[in-house]
Each structure stands twice: as C-alpha cells, then as structure tokens.
Length: 131
Ligand code: GTP
Ligand code: MG
Image (tube, rainbow, N blue to C red; front, side, top):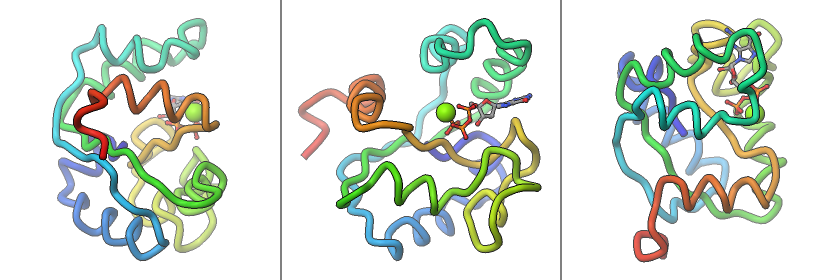
C-alpha cells in the first residue's frame, strides 16, 4: 500500500515503477481513502501501541494506493525493496529511504507474512478484482 504522504507528494508513479522493475506483477490496484475506523481495522495489531491513534489519523488523512502483488518470495523481497520502518535506518535506494518523511509517514506498507498478505488483499479487494 502506497501511504498518504507518498500519494500526496506525487510519488505514486515512481514507486510503482520501482515495484515493477523489482519483478513484482501487479494483480490488483486502486486509489481509495480509509476512514479512521477502517484504518484502525487495518492496523488492529497495533491497537495497544502509544502511536495507534496518530497512526490511524495519518492513514486516513489522504488517498492511498493499495495493491496485490505477486512474485516468488514476495513478502521477503518486498520488505527488502521498501526498507526499514524508520527511514533514517532504511538502506540506500530503498523506497522508504527515497520517499518516506518520518517513521510514521513512511511512504509504503508491506505485508509481513503470506497469511497477512491474503487477509490484507481481501481487506481491499473482492475476489473478482484479483486476477
Ligand atoms: P508496515 O509495513 O506499515 O506494517 O510497517 P512496518 O511493518 O515496517 O512497521 P510496523 O508494523 O511495526 O508499524 C506499522 C506502522 O506504524 C509503520 O509503518 C509506521 O507508519 C507506524 N509506526 C511504527 N512505529 C512507529 C512509532 O514509533 N511512532 C509512530 N508515530 N508511528 C510508528
Ligand atoms: Mg507491519
């Protein structure tokens, strides 16, 4: 998911180009916006964290571009492509190193397991939209 800071900064196209050049196939994609409640559902795993309310406010602050991606070893390879959560620690050339503004407004989200990738794909897309 390309997050609100990267979409509003006009970096959607550059990020999609990096994703495709890294060998990912785009299975489904759209532009949409989360409500505070939907952002809370998406990041429910973090609901006890001190930054949860700020995170939901930020995630619902503007348009996002969720996508379903396909590749061998996709979860691990995508997390390498996006870099560490904190852009100060993200390796040079990673998406967060290039485009993230802060540890919160960090440009992009990647699923952390195949099981969560399936849950998150279904959160944004109906089965008919995934082909
Ligand atoms: P995602 O791919 O978005 O899940 O990021 P991640 O897996 O690298 O990090 P994590 O799941 O631990 O945190 C989810 C999101 O919460 C991060 O991407 C940030 O947007 C935000 N976040 C994480 N840590 C902090 C923090 O210490 N402060 C604030 N304000 N936001 C944080
Ligand atoms: Mg995470």
